[in-house]
Length: 120
Image 1: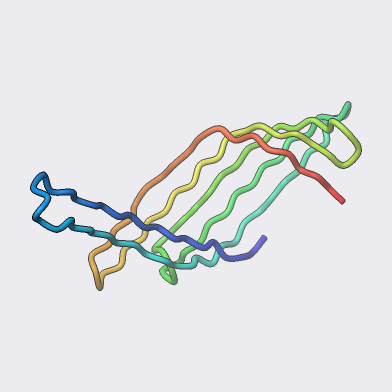
Image 2 (image 1 turned 180 degrees about the vertical axis):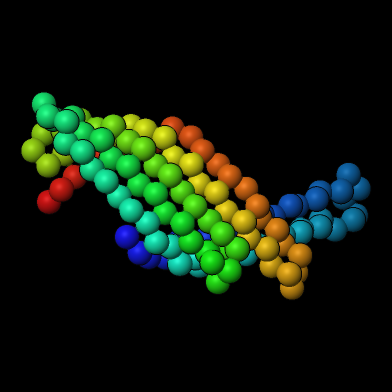
């Protein structure tokens, strides 16, 4: 696999003063960048409608982020011809820094996923 991962992060804070004469203050920041990624995908048919799906990718390479990687492991069952329900786990990590404005996003997130794949 090869492709691009688009990142868009933003946050806004609105401060409402207790004194109604004072104006409200809004602060915000955000970043937008694109990481080139390369990866592999594997699919194993277990029989009886069951399958395993695994994906791994890495990227960034200093073009967008310094480095990013992702792992996904899924188990699925074909409930109808061309329709499979999946459940599994995903972990995504990124190390991004914009030296111009001091924005740093260096984090990893993971969690359970569920989904449906429909092949036309």
